[in-house]
Length: 368
Image 1 (cartoon, rainbow, N blue to C red):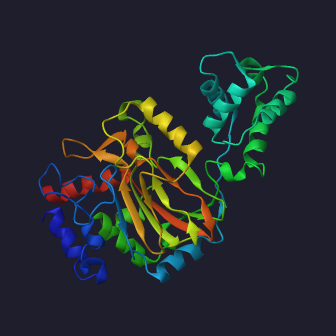
Image 2: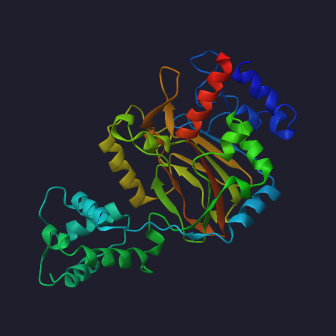
Image 3: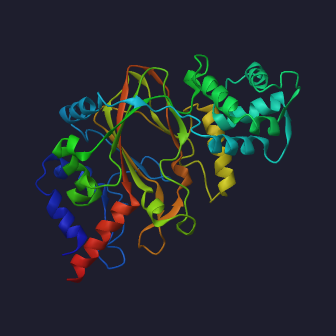
């Protein structure tokens, strides 16, 4: 039996999930039952109109019932931890400084402040902040910032970076301000597992055993997640099989609680970019997007409780046998600033490892 037949039999009889016009079961499916495509990751079938062509983003209202959304939010309530970005170690800080100085040995204070603000995503950084850093490392009389002085005082630099990123005047400008909880599938309503199974045309075991648990994120007023990609830039030849297996091929964002105002999901370059820009161009655009964070232009998806937003983070290979290792850069997106109320979302990321495991199982079933 081909994958499409098995898929249609599985969703038949699931009530509104399978029977509603353009329902969830019609969103993602295998495009054919040939040996070349039977083990493909689910592709957007076109049964539901996409909100944008590149990336292909779809909105599914009413994916979760009010009860399901409430149960997931309640399961996460005692598990939230701060998810703000931070400078974790000296190696990370050294890499940051290398990016800021870009082969220079010294920089004017204003130039260092501007470059660091862009890299660190703290647009409100001031010259006074930089002078406090120089004072902390014994460079109080310097009119310039010296790379060697920073590299010999990494503990002080780390402490200063932490103070700047968490100070009240900069808190709302962080790349990411929110709280995160991780939920294994044993904490989900079983009906949510079934719905995702139908959505992705995969067995429920694939959802339950996915390499990443569900990420539940809570945003309070003035919190946001500036422009980022969900998956990685990795190429197969540059990383271990285990690393590549953790690539997030697909994002399914479920809205558990919608804010009263703000909090939309923003794809700044959706449908507005043509061609295939070099990686360095996208790196520049991502940094520019993080600094501006206007949530205007491109595609803005308002969030409603119970709805689902789904997109592919990697493009299908031309051979029709899987997904490219290279990231689809147009999936750059942002969780816009919450203005009033709370925003709680659940991110389900289908990993390449999970996908390939069940593709192999399907191939064996077909060959028997």
